[in-house]
Length: 298
Image 1: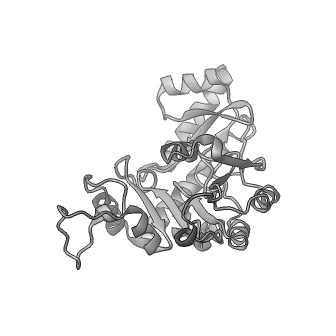
Image 2: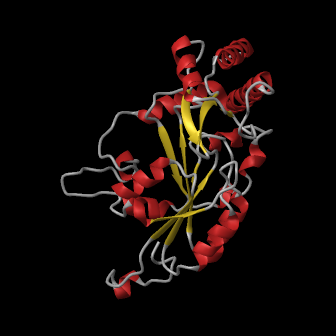
Image 3: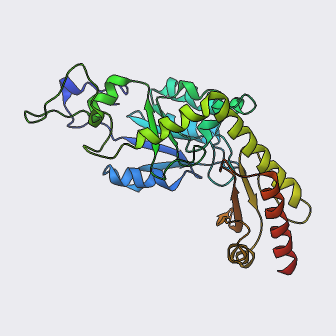
């Protein structure tokens, strides 16, 4: 990272090295702040730039931040905002990062799976030019909760950051050691569940799952529109409904479905996310009817 910013670590060491800056949209996922704290950078290290009404990072704000700092920079873009499902303009963001010598990371917890869908792939245009990506398996793949995936373009940088060696660690140079690619030195085989799901579904199965869940989200929005305000453009599998906290609690108690509450632009909302492989049109219709009934009673 320092070398990319023009700092000669070998010649100059770290003394006087420019400060690392992290840039993210103001609707970033909370884990970006947690990651900065865990790394010892602190949450205050993040410079936020404005986003639009859907939560998409606005490019002028990013360009101003990049121009205002000549040191190492990480830009965190989003593929699928957690409330609305919106995608940052990834082509423009990755191009701006390349021009500024910044590292571009794409937080695609569920949005990266849109790449599997011919109908949704365009939402991710430009994502392949980033430097690193993260996504979850526990959402659309329906595997255990702690199954996540990180990919890094530069394998050498990845190995240099994560690799470990010691006299008591006996290694076979011809074999892969997973402890060289992740923070943990020991862990259970999370990757097996992801591998099994992908092998079972296949490329076509993942595409069908993504497309069906997105269509079901649109079906839910269409069923309640007119009676309930839909606060987002339904581009993926997220539907954001403008209902109050009392309605949300009643729906959670009633039990037809479960969805969590959130706050969007200062107002309470219901965050309806469709990702389960077994969800049907009948499930969606019953959920829509439950929402309409709760709003009518409220």
